[in-house]
Amino acid sequence: MGKITNFLHEVGAEMRKTSWPKSKELTKYTVVVVSTVVIMALFFVLVDLGISELFRWFLEI
Image (spheres, rainbow, N blue to C red):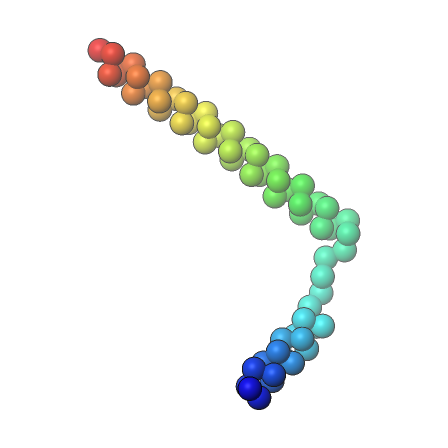
């Protein structure tokens, strides 16, 4: 049980040393991540639709 307590104490000490982003930085990072996810999702939807149409066209021949 002493190892677990020591580990949690060390984790707490390291967390106090961590520099957390300010509110403005956090907002900027969040916008970048969300916009990247949306752009990638749209890209993959378009690629999927294109490949699906190619298969439909190929199977009709």
